[in-house]
Image (cartoon, rainbow, N blue to C red; front, side):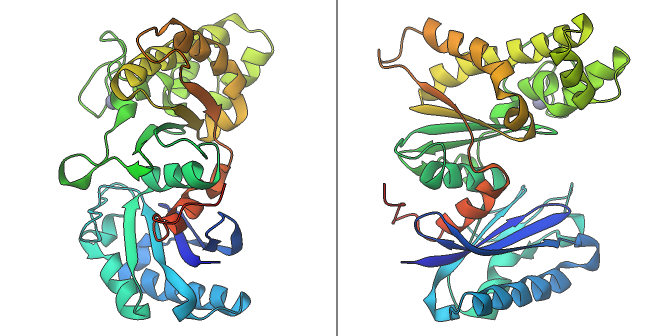
Length: 306
Ligand SMILES: [Zn+2]
Protein backbone atom coordinates (compact mmCIF):
# COMPACT_ATOMS: atom_id res chain seq x y z
CA UNK A 1 0.00 0.00 0.00
CA UNK A 2 1.44 3.31 -1.10
CA UNK A 3 0.43 6.67 0.40
CA UNK A 4 0.74 10.28 -0.71
CA UNK A 5 -0.36 13.64 0.60
CA UNK A 6 -3.03 15.29 -1.54
CA UNK A 7 -3.73 19.01 -1.30
CA UNK A 8 -6.67 20.78 -2.92
CA UNK A 9 -6.02 24.50 -2.60
CA UNK A 10 -8.92 26.88 -3.18
CA UNK A 11 -9.23 30.64 -2.87
CA UNK A 12 -10.87 30.33 0.56
CA UNK A 13 -10.51 26.70 1.74
CA UNK A 14 -7.78 24.10 1.41
CA UNK A 15 -8.27 20.34 1.82
CA UNK A 16 -5.31 18.19 2.83
CA UNK A 17 -5.41 14.40 3.09
CA UNK A 18 -3.49 11.17 3.11
CA UNK A 19 -4.47 9.33 -0.08
CA UNK A 20 -3.93 5.60 -0.57
CA UNK A 21 -3.11 4.09 -3.95
CA UNK A 22 -6.59 2.50 -4.04
CA UNK A 23 -8.08 6.01 -3.98
CA UNK A 24 -9.23 5.92 -0.35
CA UNK A 25 -8.69 8.94 1.88
CA UNK A 26 -7.06 7.72 5.09
CA UNK A 27 -7.28 11.04 6.96
CA UNK A 28 -8.15 14.57 5.93
CA UNK A 29 -8.38 18.09 7.25
CA UNK A 30 -9.96 21.29 5.91
CA UNK A 31 -8.49 24.70 6.72
CA UNK A 32 -8.80 28.30 5.54
CA UNK A 33 -6.34 29.10 2.73
CA UNK A 34 -6.11 32.67 4.13
CA UNK A 35 -4.06 34.02 1.17
CA UNK A 36 -4.13 37.49 2.78
CA UNK A 37 -1.70 36.23 5.48
CA UNK A 38 0.92 35.69 2.79
CA UNK A 39 2.54 32.66 1.19
CA UNK A 40 5.08 31.82 3.93
CA UNK A 41 2.37 31.70 6.62
CA UNK A 42 0.29 29.37 4.42
CA UNK A 43 3.24 27.02 3.88
CA UNK A 44 3.83 26.90 7.66
CA UNK A 45 0.16 26.04 8.31
CA UNK A 46 0.04 23.43 5.51
CA UNK A 47 3.26 21.84 6.83
CA UNK A 48 1.83 21.67 10.35
CA UNK A 49 -1.34 20.06 8.99
CA UNK A 50 0.67 17.47 7.02
CA UNK A 51 2.61 16.51 10.17
CA UNK A 52 -0.68 16.27 12.06
CA UNK A 53 -2.16 13.92 9.42
CA UNK A 54 0.97 11.73 9.51
CA UNK A 55 0.71 11.51 13.32
CA UNK A 56 -2.97 10.52 13.11
CA UNK A 57 -2.19 7.76 10.60
CA UNK A 58 0.99 6.44 12.23
CA UNK A 59 2.99 7.21 9.09
CA UNK A 60 6.41 8.82 8.66
CA UNK A 61 7.45 11.27 5.95
CA UNK A 62 9.59 8.45 4.51
CA UNK A 63 6.41 6.35 3.98
CA UNK A 64 5.02 8.91 1.50
CA UNK A 65 5.33 8.74 -2.30
CA UNK A 66 5.23 12.56 -2.18
CA UNK A 67 2.95 15.57 -1.95
CA UNK A 68 0.57 16.31 -4.84
CA UNK A 69 -1.11 19.71 -5.09
CA UNK A 70 -4.09 20.88 -7.13
CA UNK A 71 -4.48 24.66 -7.28
CA UNK A 72 -6.45 27.15 -9.38
CA UNK A 73 -4.24 28.49 -12.20
CA UNK A 74 -2.56 30.17 -13.91
CA UNK A 75 0.39 28.18 -12.61
CA UNK A 76 3.43 26.42 -14.00
CA UNK A 77 3.30 22.66 -13.36
CA UNK A 78 6.95 22.25 -14.37
CA UNK A 79 8.47 24.87 -12.06
CA UNK A 80 5.84 24.93 -9.26
CA UNK A 81 5.24 28.67 -9.50
CA UNK A 82 1.70 29.91 -8.82
CA UNK A 83 0.65 33.08 -10.63
CA UNK A 84 -3.04 33.37 -9.86
CA UNK A 85 -3.90 37.07 -9.72
CA UNK A 86 -7.61 36.31 -9.37
CA UNK A 87 -7.97 34.20 -6.22
CA UNK A 88 -4.42 34.04 -4.78
CA UNK A 89 -3.00 37.49 -5.63
CA UNK A 90 -0.68 37.73 -2.59
CA UNK A 91 1.04 34.47 -3.61
CA UNK A 92 2.05 35.82 -7.04
CA UNK A 93 5.29 34.19 -8.20
CA UNK A 94 5.62 31.95 -5.11
CA UNK A 95 7.00 28.45 -5.62
CA UNK A 96 4.99 25.97 -3.57
CA UNK A 97 6.85 22.92 -4.91
CA UNK A 98 10.18 24.31 -3.79
CA UNK A 99 8.79 25.39 -0.39
CA UNK A 100 7.25 22.01 0.51
CA UNK A 101 10.02 19.83 -0.94
CA UNK A 102 12.48 21.95 1.09
CA UNK A 103 10.38 21.35 4.20
CA UNK A 104 9.85 17.57 3.81
CA UNK A 105 12.61 16.39 1.44
CA UNK A 106 10.21 14.33 -0.73
CA UNK A 107 8.89 14.80 -4.30
CA UNK A 108 6.21 17.49 -4.68
CA UNK A 109 4.06 18.04 -7.76
CA UNK A 110 1.70 20.89 -8.74
CA UNK A 111 -1.18 20.81 -11.25
CA UNK A 112 -4.17 22.90 -12.19
CA UNK A 113 -7.11 21.99 -9.90
CA UNK A 114 -9.35 20.93 -12.83
CA UNK A 115 -6.66 18.46 -13.98
CA UNK A 116 -6.26 17.13 -10.42
CA UNK A 117 -10.03 16.61 -10.13
CA UNK A 118 -10.08 14.66 -13.40
CA UNK A 119 -7.18 12.47 -12.23
CA UNK A 120 -9.20 11.71 -9.08
CA UNK A 121 -12.31 10.77 -11.06
CA UNK A 122 -10.16 8.96 -13.64
CA UNK A 123 -8.32 6.69 -11.22
CA UNK A 124 -10.80 6.33 -8.36
CA UNK A 125 -14.21 7.67 -9.49
CA UNK A 126 -16.50 7.91 -12.51
CA UNK A 127 -13.70 7.49 -15.07
CA UNK A 128 -12.24 4.28 -13.71
CA UNK A 129 -11.37 1.79 -16.44
CA UNK A 130 -11.43 4.40 -19.25
CA UNK A 131 -8.18 5.88 -20.57
CA UNK A 132 -9.48 8.82 -22.59
CA UNK A 133 -11.58 11.15 -20.51
CA UNK A 134 -12.94 14.67 -20.70
CA UNK A 135 -14.42 16.29 -17.62
CA UNK A 136 -16.50 19.45 -17.51
CA UNK A 137 -17.08 21.07 -14.13
CA UNK A 138 -20.11 23.34 -13.81
CA UNK A 139 -19.85 25.76 -10.91
CA UNK A 140 -19.45 29.53 -10.90
CA UNK A 141 -17.63 29.00 -14.21
CA UNK A 142 -17.18 25.98 -16.49
CA UNK A 143 -13.86 24.20 -16.07
CA UNK A 144 -12.49 21.49 -18.31
CA UNK A 145 -9.75 18.88 -18.30
CA UNK A 146 -8.62 16.10 -20.63
CA UNK A 147 -6.94 12.79 -19.83
CA UNK A 148 -5.26 11.15 -22.83
CA UNK A 149 -4.44 7.47 -22.23
CA UNK A 150 -4.49 8.15 -18.49
CA UNK A 151 -2.14 11.14 -18.71
CA UNK A 152 -3.08 14.82 -18.32
CA UNK A 153 -3.25 16.51 -21.74
CA UNK A 154 -0.92 19.51 -21.85
CA UNK A 155 -0.89 22.37 -24.28
CA UNK A 156 1.61 25.19 -24.71
CA UNK A 157 3.62 25.99 -21.54
CA UNK A 158 2.06 22.95 -19.84
CA UNK A 159 -1.32 24.66 -19.56
CA UNK A 160 -4.59 22.83 -20.11
CA UNK A 161 -7.22 23.63 -22.73
CA UNK A 162 -10.10 25.84 -21.54
CA UNK A 163 -12.99 23.80 -22.88
CA UNK A 164 -15.48 25.94 -20.94
CA UNK A 165 -14.84 28.70 -23.46
CA UNK A 166 -15.61 26.93 -26.75
CA UNK A 167 -17.96 29.01 -28.95
CA UNK A 168 -21.67 28.18 -28.81
CA UNK A 169 -23.70 31.26 -29.84
CA UNK A 170 -22.02 34.36 -31.34
CA UNK A 171 -25.08 36.38 -30.26
CA UNK A 172 -24.64 35.35 -26.61
CA UNK A 173 -23.33 37.31 -23.62
CA UNK A 174 -19.80 38.76 -23.63
CA UNK A 175 -17.30 36.67 -21.63
CA UNK A 176 -13.98 37.70 -20.04
CA UNK A 177 -12.32 35.10 -22.32
CA UNK A 178 -12.81 37.54 -25.21
CA UNK A 179 -15.73 35.84 -26.96
CA UNK A 180 -19.48 36.32 -27.04
CA UNK A 181 -21.58 33.26 -26.28
CA UNK A 182 -18.99 30.70 -25.11
CA UNK A 183 -20.17 27.66 -23.09
CA UNK A 184 -19.37 29.31 -19.73
CA UNK A 185 -21.29 32.49 -20.62
CA UNK A 186 -24.42 30.40 -21.31
CA UNK A 187 -24.33 27.39 -18.96
CA UNK A 188 -22.29 28.27 -15.84
CA UNK A 189 -23.88 28.94 -12.45
CA UNK A 190 -23.18 32.66 -12.95
CA UNK A 191 -24.78 32.62 -16.42
CA UNK A 192 -27.92 30.89 -15.10
CA UNK A 193 -28.02 33.30 -12.12
CA UNK A 194 -27.68 36.36 -14.38
CA UNK A 195 -30.42 35.21 -16.75
CA UNK A 196 -32.51 34.38 -13.68
CA UNK A 197 -32.08 37.87 -12.22
CA UNK A 198 -33.31 39.42 -15.46
CA UNK A 199 -36.45 37.27 -15.09
CA UNK A 200 -36.94 38.28 -11.44
CA UNK A 201 -35.32 35.29 -9.67
CA UNK A 202 -32.86 35.74 -6.81
CA UNK A 203 -30.15 33.32 -7.98
CA UNK A 204 -29.45 30.08 -9.86
CA UNK A 205 -30.87 27.97 -7.01
CA UNK A 206 -34.21 29.71 -7.40
CA UNK A 207 -34.12 29.14 -11.17
CA UNK A 208 -33.68 25.38 -10.61
CA UNK A 209 -36.34 25.31 -7.88
CA UNK A 210 -38.81 27.05 -10.23
CA UNK A 211 -37.93 24.65 -13.07
CA UNK A 212 -38.97 21.76 -10.85
CA UNK A 213 -42.21 23.65 -10.12
CA UNK A 214 -42.86 23.98 -13.87
CA UNK A 215 -42.31 27.77 -14.20
CA UNK A 216 -42.06 28.69 -17.91
CA UNK A 217 -39.50 31.49 -17.51
CA UNK A 218 -37.21 29.28 -15.44
CA UNK A 219 -37.59 26.44 -17.93
CA UNK A 220 -36.53 28.72 -20.81
CA UNK A 221 -33.39 29.72 -18.87
CA UNK A 222 -32.56 26.09 -18.20
CA UNK A 223 -33.28 25.16 -21.83
CA UNK A 224 -30.70 27.73 -23.00
CA UNK A 225 -28.06 26.22 -20.65
CA UNK A 226 -28.91 22.64 -21.70
CA UNK A 227 -28.77 23.55 -25.42
CA UNK A 228 -25.36 25.17 -24.84
CA UNK A 229 -24.07 22.02 -23.12
CA UNK A 230 -25.38 19.82 -25.92
CA UNK A 231 -23.70 22.00 -28.57
CA UNK A 232 -20.48 22.02 -26.53
CA UNK A 233 -20.63 18.25 -26.33
CA UNK A 234 -20.74 18.01 -30.14
CA UNK A 235 -17.45 19.95 -30.22
CA UNK A 236 -15.91 17.77 -27.51
CA UNK A 237 -16.89 14.52 -29.24
CA UNK A 238 -15.48 15.63 -32.58
CA UNK A 239 -12.31 17.13 -31.10
CA UNK A 240 -11.29 14.51 -28.52
CA UNK A 241 -13.53 11.46 -29.05
CA UNK A 242 -13.23 10.50 -25.37
CA UNK A 243 -14.27 7.08 -24.03
CA UNK A 244 -16.27 8.89 -21.40
CA UNK A 245 -17.38 12.44 -20.61
CA UNK A 246 -17.71 13.18 -16.89
CA UNK A 247 -19.98 16.01 -15.75
CA UNK A 248 -19.10 17.43 -12.34
CA UNK A 249 -19.40 20.54 -10.18
CA UNK A 250 -22.23 21.77 -7.97
CA UNK A 251 -24.78 22.17 -10.78
CA UNK A 252 -24.30 18.62 -12.10
CA UNK A 253 -24.11 17.17 -8.61
CA UNK A 254 -27.66 18.40 -8.00
CA UNK A 255 -29.23 18.60 -11.45
CA UNK A 256 -27.43 16.10 -13.74
CA UNK A 257 -30.79 14.51 -14.66
CA UNK A 258 -32.00 17.78 -16.20
CA UNK A 259 -29.03 17.84 -18.62
CA UNK A 260 -28.63 14.14 -19.37
CA UNK A 261 -31.38 13.52 -22.01
CA UNK A 262 -30.19 16.28 -24.38
CA UNK A 263 -26.57 15.17 -23.96
CA UNK A 264 -27.42 11.51 -24.67
CA UNK A 265 -29.30 12.64 -27.77
CA UNK A 266 -26.14 14.36 -29.05
CA UNK A 267 -24.12 11.19 -28.50
CA UNK A 268 -26.74 9.21 -30.46
CA UNK A 269 -26.64 11.70 -33.36
CA UNK A 270 -22.84 11.82 -33.60
CA UNK A 271 -22.21 9.14 -36.22
CA UNK A 272 -18.54 9.62 -37.05
CA UNK A 273 -17.16 7.94 -33.92
CA UNK A 274 -16.96 4.19 -33.22
CA UNK A 275 -20.30 2.37 -33.08
CA UNK A 276 -19.81 1.66 -29.37
CA UNK A 277 -20.18 5.42 -28.88
CA UNK A 278 -19.11 7.51 -25.96
CA UNK A 279 -20.30 7.18 -22.40
CA UNK A 280 -21.70 10.06 -20.37
CA UNK A 281 -21.64 10.00 -16.59
CA UNK A 282 -21.92 12.07 -13.47
CA UNK A 283 -18.84 12.69 -11.31
CA UNK A 284 -18.87 10.48 -8.21
CA UNK A 285 -16.18 11.85 -5.87
CA UNK A 286 -17.86 15.25 -5.51
CA UNK A 287 -15.76 17.58 -3.31
CA UNK A 288 -13.03 14.97 -2.82
CA UNK A 289 -12.09 14.64 -6.51
CA UNK A 290 -9.35 17.29 -6.37
CA UNK A 291 -7.90 15.96 -3.14
CA UNK A 292 -7.78 12.33 -4.32
CA UNK A 293 -6.45 13.35 -7.74
CA UNK A 294 -3.72 15.46 -6.15
CA UNK A 295 -2.59 12.34 -4.26
CA UNK A 296 -2.59 10.40 -7.54
CA UNK A 297 -0.20 12.96 -9.05
CA UNK A 298 2.42 11.15 -7.01
CA UNK A 299 1.21 7.66 -7.93
CA UNK A 300 0.39 8.10 -11.65
CA UNK A 301 2.56 5.20 -12.69
CA UNK A 302 0.57 3.07 -10.27
CA UNK A 303 -3.14 3.40 -11.02
CA UNK A 304 -5.74 2.08 -8.56
CA UNK A 305 -6.31 -1.64 -8.74
CA UNK A 306 -9.50 -2.38 -10.65
ZN1 LIG B 1 -15.71 32.50 -22.23
